[in-house]
Every structure is written in structure tokens, then in C-alpha cells.
Image (cartoon, rainbow, N blue to C red):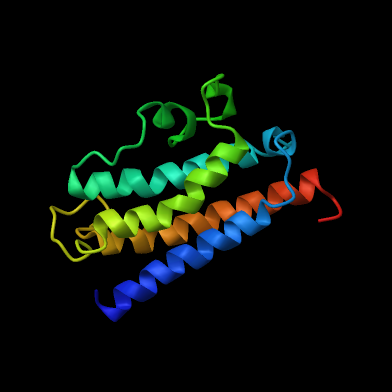
Amino acid sequence: MKQRHEVLFKQLECYRSYVLSVMENVTEEEAEIIPIGFNNNIRWNLGHMYLDQYLWIQAVTKEKCGVPEQFKSWFGFGTSPANFNSETPSLEELKILLKKQPAKIKDVYGERLEEEFPPTEMGMHTIEQVLIRTIFHEGMHLQAILDLKKCIQPSF
């Protein structure tokens, strides 16, 4: 594996570890709160981050990524916690999925990062490009989670 790919996967792991460290003192109940002025809660943001990486990989490769189809109805673009049901993963379940995801992506796609595919609507045509995009996206949702935590845990 090329050095830049090792760096990319190290970044995925480090950023994800930071997201999970932010979640350490958030309860299941707090993860459900939607403060005034927000459209979603912490649990939705975490599920969306998890789903987004796989959806973009799937968009470029046209291959199924193994994410249950229901994830799109719970955490896809334009959804909200109103779409949740008794089968929606809990905060703890999402944290486990998120923790395992970088290594799983590395195992499945690590040797395919430069493989060329027809470009997406954003012009991405490799898995490497998709992962760079998803790191940016994850940062946006991390900020949303930090903002939610400030509303939910004022002493944060």
C-alpha cells in the first residue's frame, strides 16, 4: 500500500476516534434530544456519518457495501429521527459500527483506492477520492454533534 494511502487510513482512524471520544459522556437519552433550531439529534448524525461513507463508495463502485437497506430510511439524506423505529440502531450500536468501519473499509477497499470508475456527479472516480470527501463530511457532522452537545450539556 502506498504511503499516502496509509496516511489516508490513519486519518480515517484518528478522526473517527475523535468523534467517538466526543461521545464518551453522551447518554442514550441525550443522543435523542433535538434542541430548538436543529433538525436532527446526535444519534441521527452518527448513523448518517456511518451510512455516508458506504453510500459514496457504492456510488462510485456500483457495488453493494453490505449496509442494511433500512439505514437509508433512518439516516439517509433528507431523513430525520421521525423515521426511527424499534429496529433503528441505538447510540451504543452505532458507536460499535463506527469504531469498526475504518478497518473494515481498509480491509475491503485498501488495495482498490486508485481503481478507476465512471465519475460520480461530483467528478469522483476513485475510492480514494470518495474517502477524502467523506472525511470532510464527517467533520461537518462532528461540528453538528458538538453544537448539539453544547445545547444538551451546557457545561460541556
